[in-house]
View 1 (cartoon, rainbow, N blue to C red):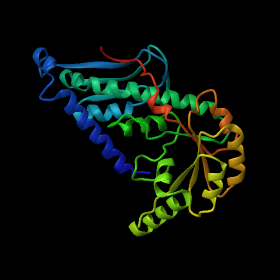
View 2 (view 1 turned 90 degrees about the horizontal axis):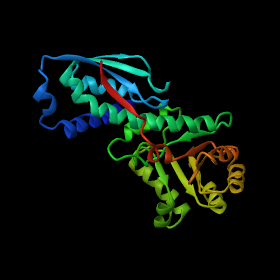
View 3 (view 1 turned 180 degrees about the vertical axis):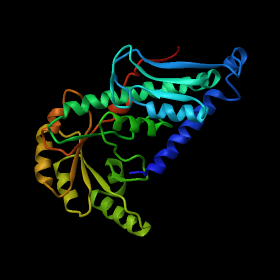
View 4 (view 1 turned 60 degrees about the vertical axis):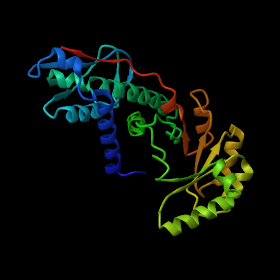
Length: 285
């Protein structure tokens, strides 16, 4: 996984690029009618229900736009919210508040939706010992925000990107000439490059599980689109030789049944690619 420093660098890039994209050479709507000496106060109002996420990110945005803005947080990240709740107040330059408004709302609406869905999945897994993972099926440019939201909702992050973990999927295996060759080539590559990266290998059937187990050094086996019966068989076969992960079309109706098969992890792209934004507003007070 990436370091805290790398993660913060990603957040800084997101904020800088989002402000560049939205503000350009100036917020002319505000500049045209609001004096630069004017001050005001606004509240983040919830018009929905779920898990709030992005409060700390909003604080970073306000600080980047104007370090003099003061934020009073009433509800922290990961807390359940309902219609009418006030998450925070922000006070200071009226121009600065308006400049930051859309970025704060866009990010928090998206992050809260992801955190809410993740919490739903976490609750469905309660008592099973199985953990929910996100994937790389994220919105280009804001992956750090979406993966952050997953952790706020109680889930765990899979690899952040292509560089922090090895994941040999079906295309890698086919292009490399088979599972064993793909694993051997990968392990040789890591030795040559002096890299210490965990290796996950995808299995499409029970025969492939058996072949993967013949190689040493595999961190986790991804059971892709397995049915319940084959998942149970795979988990029994693998035992404690490595960790297990189920993936592929798993939803609210099936996630509990897959967990009961004994897998360590379930990964779901739906956490980040199939959510409806939480309704939030930033209103002057």
